[in-house]
Length: 404
Ligand code: PMP
Picture 1: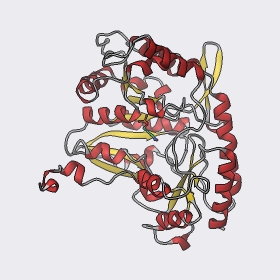
Picture 2 (picture 1 turned 120 degrees about the horizontal axis):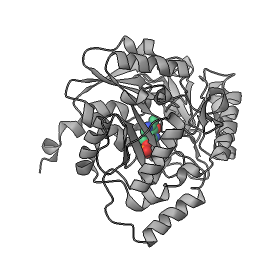
Picture 3 (picture 1 turned 30 degrees about the vertical axis):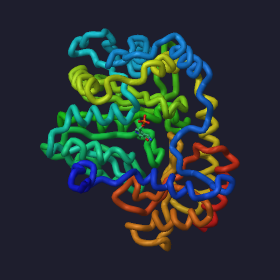
């Protein structure tokens, strides 16, 4: 069989994720020597109430198909959270809500929410503006819809601003992706930047997709306050929190990173009811639903206090800055658990510097991710500090040596 002839262009023309490649190269390093700063998932245990609730759901037989849009109990929990956090009033009935009320859809991972949004909104030739550097999936979201990814360079500070975005808008622009706190740089947009982006998108009739998978991981200097009842709660700024945002912002959040359940594949989308309805229709055929017992696992997740874990990540972030900022450029990572660090010029040109630095790390048993994995250029590297502090310290010693 000539299998090559059978493979679709859609698949044949794309590369596997660069993070996977790092993982495979890392598999060749003995575990006791390996210093892995490449992994983008939390290293703390899943909170007990969440684990217990999922196990209970399996034991109680909640294992069949759930509703496509998500179990009502979880959708109600999300509605309560978005009410207190953003002031949104969601429609959570089994039927489509009033057109003016934002809808909510539980998805198998945040990736699924992103994919469904783009499948629902992008026609061939439409344009999707994505920040560069970006989460690895973003360019492919356009590709899978035969649309065009328009890269908005955010170098050197990694801030997606209205000014940078507006220059790239055309009559074909349908959507802008904002990712704050961001992967790979951990940069958190200010309230002002969020407001300007929202105003721009509204003026141009473009959806602002706000990927907030790292919303809980925001450190004090980048937070703003939201009122929950009569108590102020510190939160990462979000365009979704601004007045009237729900007619223009498509909010995407997840459970995987916040509660260390990346393998459970759970996220959600909320925003204009009409868009959520289209995404729900597509979900029926793409995924059918999100994992049923695991949805029960996260019903009470919003009541779990993660402040200790966030404080620990802040301690590690501070250590990264303390060790690396004197040696090279490290734009302040105000959230998530990454830093995107500039590689010195002597490691090569703008198209292979990150790769050369990465290879040099591998010879010292250190794994980071070259910038080209997340960008059209290759001048930086991403390190993840979601790793025990002893290992992080060893990694920083090696990096300090390589950067000195
Ligand atoms: N968005 C961003 C910015 C991410 O970094 C990731 C995962 N690394 C995702 C979405 C996808 O997350 P999930 O595992 O929930 O699909």
